[in-house]
Image (cartoon, rainbow, N blue to C red):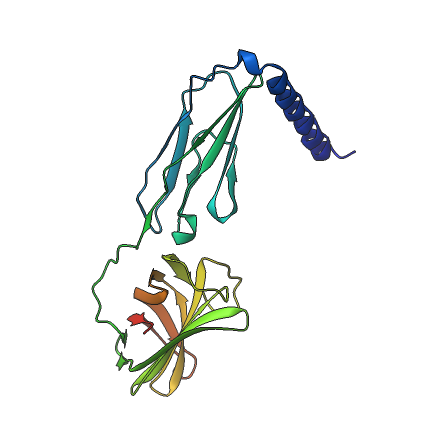
Length: 241
C-alpha cells in the first residue's frame, strides 16, 4: 500500500473513533460553551477573507465548509483574492480529543465591488498613442464554453472573454494572452481598431455585477498589434445594458 493512502486511511479511522467516542460521551460534553467565530466581512473583491474560530480547548480537528466548495481544517483559514462567489455563511465543526463536537456559523459574509484605481468614462476605451474608442452597441452573453462582453463603435470594437459560460462574478481578474493556460481568474481582452487586432497580454481587470448586468473596467492592459508590430497600453470601461 502506498504511504499516502495508508495515512489517509489511518486519519479516517482516528476520526471515526473520535466520532464514536463523542456518541458514547455526550453526557461529558459541556453543552454550555460554543465556539466563537469571526470574519473580516465586508471584504472588497480581490482582497482576502479571513475566518477564525476560538473558545474550545483540547481540539482534535477543525472542519470548515462554505460557499463555492470551500473547506479547510485550519483554525484561521484565509481565502485570498475573493469574488462574489465567496459570499455567504461559513460553517465550522470543532472536534475535541474527547470526542465532543461544537458547531458554529458565521454571519453572512459580504463581498463588495472592487475599488478602481482610476476614473474612466463609461463605454469608452483608449489605446495609448493609437486611438480613442466610443462604444455604442454592447452585448453580453454565453457562447460555447465562455461568456463574452462585446462592444462595438465607429472607431473600433472590444471583446472580453471569461473562462466560464456563466455570468462573471464580481471580482478582480488578470488579462491573459491567447494560447496561454487560463482559468476562472483570467480573461482574454482584444480590441479591433486602426486596421488591426490588438491582443491584451497582461493587466488587471475589474468586474462588478449589478442586477445581473456586468461592468468591466481596466486602467492598464498591455496590448500588442501583430499587424503593425507595435506594443502599447490601453484602458476601458464597458457596461452591459
